[in-house]
Image (cartoon, rainbow, N blue to C red; front, side, top):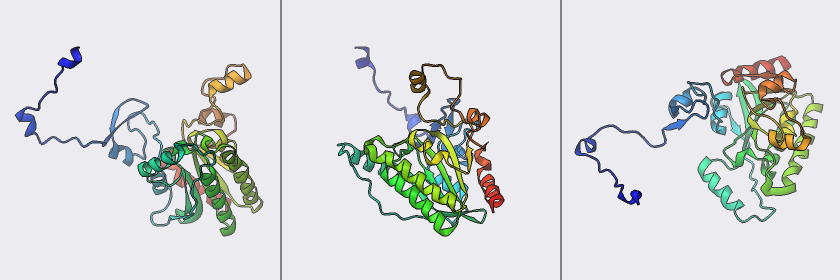
Length: 278
């Protein structure tokens, strides 16, 4: 076979002496324009492609760094272990591998911090951990955060990114929808502000519960938001749907969200909304 005849090219003496060094893992390909971007350049641009404006998803730590005043974030240290109610063979192994890869214990980080001096309770979901799916621990952490907001009389901000309820935990994951919703009812009764920020993508049981219940619902540009995918909906109702009907822009036009905010303006927008509510 021709493949067997292909030999690895040996580096020349000239190449061996070359000082050119391209570090591994320092570059990333944009899903929008397909250009190769230096990761540090992307980071400095708030994880937005400098060529086409495509929004990359953000790690929890990076999001908190962008939104919360430096040195003010205090994480809620909840010692809750993720269970395996369906006794799926690979679930525990997958969780362990994801924790090592992402540096996260679960798909949401919660705590208290300041936005331009205004203290808030904040929850940030991460798509890198099982696509931000909501299982028992995620539901419990968000519920605990809501309860802390009530107890401390603070505004609540939740950044959502999720594929929905976590199928590996079955019906117990679906119960988190009711639990978080009930907790938000208490927050509302206490007269406290809840700002929901939808990022790409926000789907399933998360959209159908706390993500849609904000007093004010914001979104990043071009975020995909919905319950099920377009093809599933079309097959269910037997009708064609308009192009882009699950984009943030379409949902803003139809009243589902209140404002689309560019990433660079999110912190100041949240601050102003908190000030208005006070």
